[in-house]
Structures are given as C-alpha cells and as structure tokens.
Length: 550
Image (cartoon, rainbow, N blue to C red):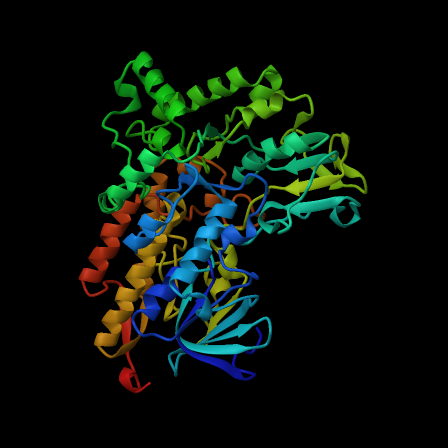
C-alpha cells in the first residue's frame, strides 16, 4: 500500500468525498450547509459521474426525467425543463452542471484526481487519503460516493492487443463521439447499454454483428417530447409525488399499487393488463402490474411469456426471435432494459445476431473475431457493452485500510459486508452512499442518494451535538444486516438470475446478492428507526480534542 502519511498534506478537511457525480455533489451541498470543510475528489475531467463517462450512442435514463432529478430544492424542480419523457445523457449532464453552478459546488470539487489509498489512524481518529498525483488529504470523515456502476469491465479476450481496428467500451466512450458510417461493427453484449446503442449503430454501420451471450428482457420506453400539460401537472404536485415515491419499493411515484396476484385473474384480464403496460412503456409500471411478479415463479412466468411473445411477433426471423427471447431468468431479476426499436433492428438486412453462449468467443484477431467453433468475423470496430464491476468495484480499486490492520479488500473477500449499506464494521468514520446492502440500484437512484446523504448529515449532526468524533457499526450489527439482506433476496426470484447484482459478470467475483430488495420504503423506515433509537447498531467514540476547538 502507498504510504498515505508521506508527502505534504495539501488539505485538512472535516469530510473528504470520493466522487463528483450526483452523490458527491449533493454531499457537498448538504455537508457544507452544516459548516463543514468538504472537498470532493473526481477522477474525470468533468463532474457528473456515470453521466460524464457513459456517452455511448443512445445513452438515456430508464427512469422518467421528471422523477430522475433532485428533490431537495423546490425552486430547482420548478425551474428546470426536461425536453423529453426520458432524459438523454447530454441533457442529464447539462442538468448536473446547472445544479453545480446554481449551488456553487465546483469550488469544492478537485477534478482529474483519483484516490488510490485511504488509511484510518485509530489514534487520531482521522483518515489520510493519497491521490494518484502524490497529494494527501486528511479528514475526520470520508464519504465514498464513487458510484455503483463506475468501474468498466473490459473482457480480457486473447488477442485484444493484436486487433488493428478500433475498440470502445460503453463506459469509456470518446467525448468527441464515434462515427461508424460505412464500417463493419461488432457489439459484444446485450445489456442495457447494448440495447440502447445497437439501434443507433445499426443505422450508421455498413454491417452490425451483435454477439450475444445472454438475452435480456427489454420493454418499449415510449419516449416522446415532454407534454407541457404533463409537466405542469407534475410540477404542481411535486411535494406530494416525492412523498408518495418514498412509500414505494422503487422510490418512483405515479403508479397505482397492485392489489392482486397475477394468478388471481383470468388469462384475458392478465394479458389485457400486460398489453396496457406494454403500450404505456416503462419498466416499473410493468413489474408493478401484480403483487407477486418478483416472488412467485408461476406469476412471473405469465409476465415473461407475454414479453417473449411480443419479441416473436416483432422479429421476423424465427431463429433470431428465439435467441432474443430470454428463457434463463425470470423477467425483472436482471436489469430490465428499456428500448426504442431494439427488436425491430434485427429485421434490418445489415444486422446479424451471433449466439456466443453456444459458440463462445475464442479470441480477437488482427482483423476481427474468431469463435471457438471456428467462425470468423471481419470487423473494423468492436464495441464492448460488457458492463461494470458493479457495487464493489469502485471501492475495491482503492486500497482502504486502518492502522490496526483492517483491509477492506480482505474484509470483502467473500462478498461485501456492510451495515445498512452505509458503513463497514472495522472502518470507522467511512460512510458509503448507496453501497451494497442498500436498495440504491433497485430504485430511482437520486432518491436513494438523497436519503443516504441526509442520513449521513443527520448522523454527523447528532455526533457534533454530543462531542463525538468516531462512529462504526458493530460486527454483530453488520452480520445481522447481511443476513437480513440475504434472507430478503432468497425470498424472491432475484437469485435465479446470473446478474451483476450477484457479481456474475466478473470472473472470480464471489456470487453474493448485493442489493437490498426489500424495497426503498421498507429500507427508509428501518434507517429512520435506527436513527431514532440513538443509532442502534453503531458504536461511538468521544473526541480526544473538543470538536469546537478544531
């Protein structure tokens, strides 16, 4: 580990924040408002986190733009105008930059700075962070706001370095864009980013070959320009809508709570309900059609088969349609994609689908790609839509240790361990925003970010009032919470899928279900109850030097 104590200390902070995306920016705003000295460290050359890096063609949020926005300031909510039902990457990044300027957040963000190590000194109750530029910063508290999908996974295919064409990763897209006109392009991966980019690349490329290992369910987004009346009505009801969203499993309001099992109605009623949801567009609406789609396999089968039949009706070639129709996981147990014209794209003469589950990719060659079965494909460009080392990757990239020998990588060797997804036993004063063990990735992320940052801020206020400067969860509380997260997951259908929720996309990563899927509403009530009970499950320490004198 680099010695984080060596070199000049460039900053003395109350709170160091790792990440300059939506979570890091809100943490600056909220904690600075408490009079704390804060600074965020961001590896990118601009703020925005995932919306800074993911510039691939068609990148768009899968939560409606009027919902996917900060709720902490009503004037901001009223003033900002979203041009479409679902925000594009450029529009969301424009919004994030507007927020940073509106609340003067940039002065506390240090760009092009990656935190490489963090060491907690148990005697001083202080973290020392080292950057890739050789700087160090000391802070009483660290807030890890590095994101759940911020560590791109580029597959280590043999021959990658010998490929003479150009290759790209969806999470590391060139800021100037890419023109695929007239090129033979291969896209590897059909998750959310692949589903979004494939229709657009197909309209540019001379020929597009899609290499699919696992078919994923995708629903139509039904994106459209923002309707002025819809915007006016939504903004007039923002406070009520935000409160209603907090009382839902996904932190997204506007959908009536289901009241029946999918098996309680006739086939005709059920198919009519699914058809209405399909025409409405959106993933949450579809999964919210009945009470038991994520816990009852027989009920889920009806929802899965409805979508499979839609795919068969759209894709003209029966063999291609069957390859695109997922049969290895229940709908909703992997990230449910939204698309515009995805399945229709396979009816184009210049698009072909290759099943690399039955005939795996063996190597990249100078001119393209070869499968284990001997198929060869000449390609001018390859796009890896292969996802991320989700939920734990960003923290595992940082060498996080304590002076008494705790090592986060070792602590998480068998899978991530947290209490509430907010803190880790043995690592005092280190908070995590939407970490493993929290519902973040299964919710409207900004709502989860605000809930976590507000909880952290309230906790620090509680400590300051009592002259305390050290907090960590007990090992018992962490163990009980991890068990609870697993118990909840295994009472659902989620573990039936080999998803990034389970770490299944990363070779050698422990197969542990990482998000909390008991629902945002249930989780928030639990966090509030923990705080109301004097932060039950946490162990506090009293400051050696009075807080006021620091």
